[in-house]
Length: 155
Image (cartoon, rainbow, N blue to C red; front, top):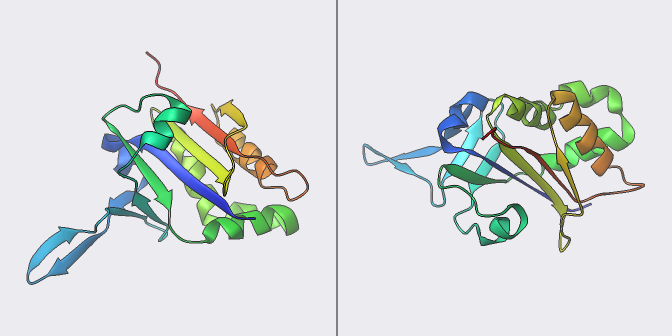
């Protein structure tokens, strides 16, 4: 299925989950990509979304200290395939491992929806295992779901 995966995390905690901005060197100078891209230590690429109006409608007004990132490569299909065909490989899935690490942040949002669909279920997350369970449940071909997983800062 054609899912889109976006994450929203605090800007100052980007390095906590080993995300680093991808920079380009040209003529002896270093530049950001346009739009900025972030890469994990396992080569998962996210592109920053500048226009966040869509996310404001779903989550509420985003704080200025957050960054919205869109998964660029089709590795979400690898996770989907593992869930539906060979769950024994889930522990090795680098995207799932990365998403589980978001639990270490003060807050996060994982938005996973199919093309032209809206979030239908929202889950407050408090453990790595919950992330894995909710994503696996959502990506089942027999009953796909469009979800928002989140952990909010304690005020």
